[in-house]
Amino acid sequence: MKTTLDLPDDLMREVKVLAAQSDRKLKDLLAELLQNGMAKSKKRPLPHPKSDISAAG
Image (tube, rainbow, N blue to C red; front, side):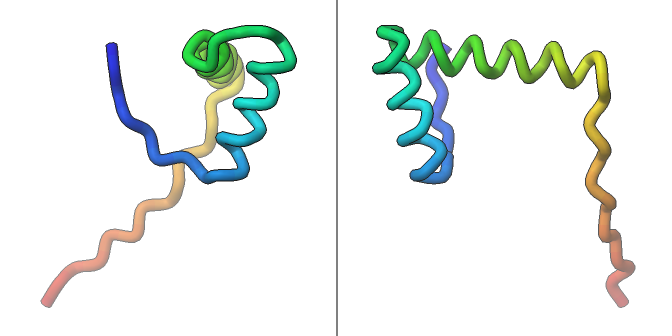
């Protein structure tokens, strides 16, 4: 599936360098990094940001 992400420039440069150093396609490395992050979050749930719900009135 194709998608568009808006990532910080410095993060994207870091991932591109890592992909080049490991002789891997950028899309494959990003998929692996996301899968690893998802697996870790299942083991240790990330805290939910506090919602700031204000009543308008």
